[in-house]
Length: 133
Image: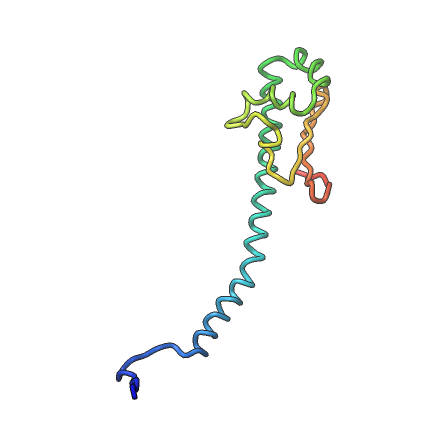
């Protein structure tokens, strides 16, 4: 008959100690995950706001470069993507599509009239509300 003996001085964690450590880690994760999700949502919202501000600055630069009288009449006949295409040279590292420039879950509507300069409208698509910025 083979018997096994524990060597003297051999230490190990008991099942209760391991369960306690796992449950503490679980509690910390339970408390931290909602905060991480909120931080991610806030950062996406801030990115959308900064991109909308960049579009507004690009509109002003476009008007200053080409003259308000020259660009205002043709601006109103364009859709948002066509207007955005005109603004790409005035934006840093801008993709070719407006949908790629604004983060997912947000939409932007460029002003239709440059005579009375207004800001672009940034919309949260999940709640369909405009974001004041």
